[in-house]
Image 1 (cartoon, one colour):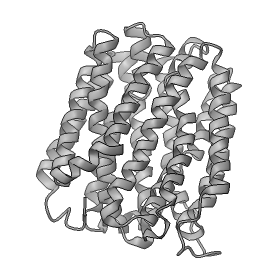
Image 2 (tube, one colour):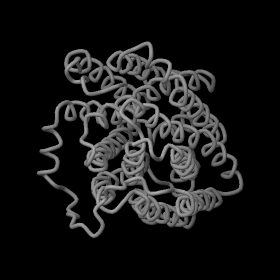
Image 3 (cartoon, rainbow, N blue to C red):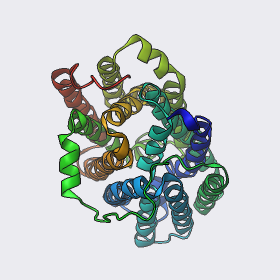
Image 4 (cartoon, one colour):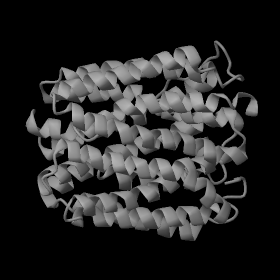
Length: 397
């Protein structure tokens, strides 16, 4: 399984370049929709949610295809689709075009489970947490530089941000074509595969696997808690605190730095000192505190500190739980199970922005953040009660 260790920096670079493009739109999409297209806060929530809804539908499909036909072709095609979606964003002049561009982007973005399965292919169980952390660090760094670039480009026009995003994803596609080796050497070429979006038997068998069901539920609630602020964090800065697009870009960049530092190095040291359950509890405490403090940040510095606290928590949680899920999954179903996990994560990213948009517009700007904090507390209680030694016995985290 260590045959392709040299592939780690290549998959890292591919994901990082792609996430640079995604990160460019993060701080400017809500303000673009609000200022230029006059879309309501709830409408912005719909636009953010449709991206994840498509991921929910197609993550398991792409994961299963990659189990049968290989990871590399799926990664390449999805990056091309992502590039096209960003070009559509640049030409968006209405709710409908912007909505369709994010639908297409969600299809292209349904490759995260495939990338995680790629990591599982080339790492041992004892190395998997670090490997998943490397993907997390690529996300974090993409969210460091992407939002900064997006904030700066928005000064020249939002279309330029879309062009830059498309260029980054297209570059990642070329990088994958020429440098990314295939990791799934046990694929069945020409094998028969079900393209059903929902496969009840597959879901049933997945939740019957020891510990996998509980871990999927934990990850779902965590992502839902974070997703409440996906469409509203930039709006909070813009409408409540008067932040510019560049300042919002700085905020996302700072949060990305914190996340990449945690996942790229600090997590490895923490995993030596703490067992997986205690890492999860520590991460949940940081995440709950950050979410609860963000709407009361008062100014840029206060919001930045609260955002950093949040990202310490998410930086610990996501690779740790992903590693546990991967360790509990059979070797021949890594793509399928990680794809199912990403699908449920995408569903959480549908429900979170929908509720966040409703709460922000009709209840109060604090409520998306407080909702996330409350659900994080629920996850904390579930972890204390149900995540025991037996659940973690197959993990080397």
